[in-house]
Length: 128
Image (tube, rainbow, N blue to C red; front, side):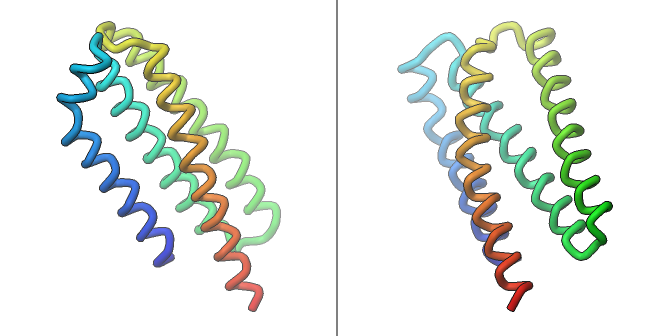
């Protein structure tokens, strides 16, 4: 749990640094790509944190509940992402959709690596 909180804090700090660097990123990329990067980052962060918390809750449950939480959580998070993607496309037309999706996929893959490492560490500690 401590490792998860530390990594979450570091990822959140990375987001804060991004917000600090926003004017420079916006000047270099233009056309709202900085907003798209920020949205992709924070949605990925929410996605990973919610997935981790759900799996942490399901660790001590029986296998049926664990797998239901695992696959149901993935499906629910995917639906939430699709809804958010639609809302961004519908109401934030100035945000480049390709930049948002690219940033989301990049940050999601990056944060997924951390989530897998944390889950493996917790599984190892529970087996000892």
